[in-house]
Amino acid sequence: MLPITLNGQPSTLSTFLTVADLLRQLGHDPRRVAVEVNREVVPRARHAEHRLQAGDAVEVVTLVGGGEEPATPAEPPLKIGPFTFRSRLFTGTGKYASYELMRDCLAASGCEVTTVAVRRERLVDARGRSLLDHLDLNRYVILPNTAGCFSAEDAVRHARLARELLSNLGNRGAEWVKLECLADKKTLLPDPVGTLQATETLVKDGFQVLVYTSDDPVLAKRLKELGAASVMPAGSPIGSGQGVLNPNNLRIILEYLKEGDPDYPVIVDAGVGTASDVAVAMELGCDGVLLNTGIASAQDPLRMAWAMRYACEAGRLAYRAGRIPRKLYATASSPWEGRIA
Image (tube, rainbow, N blue to C red; front, side):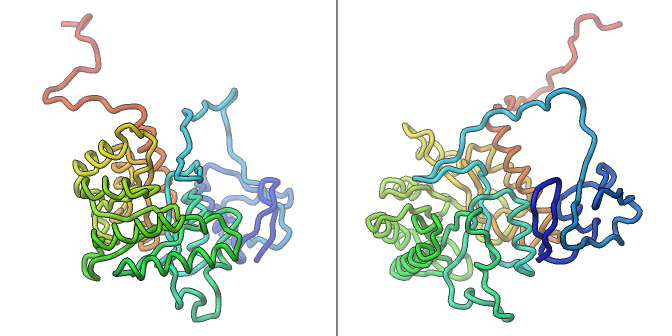
C-alpha cells in the first residue's frame, strides 16, 4: 500500500503508480488537467515516467468557469427497508481479474452496496488472500446473496450463515439478503415455487429480503405480498448481456408493485451488458440496477464502471424529467412563422 496526499486528502494507492496510471484510475483526461507533485509541476510528457512515492503530495487541477456550478436536480434517496442510499447502482464482486481491480471498479461505480456470495472457496484465493481484506466495510454495505442455491432449504441456510458472518464483522448487511433460488444451471432462471417458499421463511426469520425473480408480473406481486423488501426482476438471464428483453413486463411489474405504494423499490437484476441497458431500465422507472458481469467482464472494466455509474444517474434523471411523446410524423423545432420565402 502506498500512502499519498491527493488534493489535500489522505489517500492510499494499492501499488506503485505513475502519474499517468493515477489519472487513468481517477478517470481524468490528461489533456484537461495539470498535475503537481510535491509543489513541482509534472509536464504531461512526463506523466508516464514519473512514479509516485510514499508521502507524495499530489495536486490534480483543472480550469473552472466563474460563478457557481449549477446544482444537480434534487433526487430523493433510495430506501429499502431500514436502508437509505444515494447511489442506485448495486454491483457485485465476482469475475474480476484481481481483487485490486475489483476494489477500483467498485469505487468508480459510485456504489454503496456490493453483493457477495457465501462460498467456502471464496474465503481465500490461491495466494491466501481474503475477499474481505479488499472491501472497505465502513464504506460499503454488503448484500449477501444465495447465488448457486437450487432449493429453498439451501437458500435459507446460506442466508443464515451470511447473517452470522456479517454480524461478526459488524456490517449492516447482516440485516438483509439477496435471495436467489435457481431452477437449473443452464438458464439460471429462478424457481418460482422455491423462491416463494424461501421468501416466506426468510421474512418470518427477520430478514429484509431482496428477491431475484423473473419478469412475471403475477409472481412479482405474490413476492411483495409475502413481505419482500424489494422485488428484483431479471432484465435477461444472468451474465447474458442481453439487456432488458421484455420492457412491457417490467412496466406491468412497476404498475402492480407501486400501486398505492409509489416508493416500493423495484430493482433490475441480471442481464445488463453495457451502459445503455442500465439507462433503459432506469428510464422505465425502475429504482435501481444490480450488475456484475457487465463491468467485470468488459474489455476495460474500470472504464465500464464509470459508464455504468453515469448511465444510472442519467436514466434516473430522464425518467424524472419525463420524455417527449413518440409521434409518427415530424414536429419542426424552428417556428414556421417569419420564414424567408
